[in-house]
Length: 222
Image (cartoon, rainbow, N blue to C red):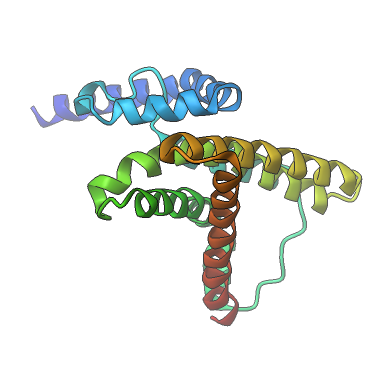
């Protein structure tokens, strides 16, 4: 009986893992081409029962995590020079590809978290796990391409055989795409003008960078 349960669990895992090969590129394409529609899709899926939720796409946090893991793998294959590590905590994170990928996923999840909290505050909604989940999930879709662009640009900057101009152009184009989508999202959800929405989008990004620096401080000290 236990063996059959284990076999079914393995079958389910095998199907789920291989289905990512189909649904990951589809989800990435949908986010890149129709970011607001994909975010609205995420909001709608929150109301479905758990079994049928995100049936034709990856869940947003999983999409973000896989994106960071893939980009981390590309960075490893690029044979980039390793950063100089001084502290024990730095070695614990960056000496392990798995830990480095999880750390980067945590860093990029700051963007969805800050944007979701700002939205709820502007809406006057009480902050709770249930109220935070829908906007955070929707924002995770937006953070996926952002991770591709920023990590990809960083890889180009560290390569000696590729001009830094390409990395800069990639980052600028990605930043423009991200802020445009974020502005439209804030404008649509809050019913405000484009200028105010753009200010919120920029402010959310600045706050995420502040939290990012705050996380780096103990990393540099220990």
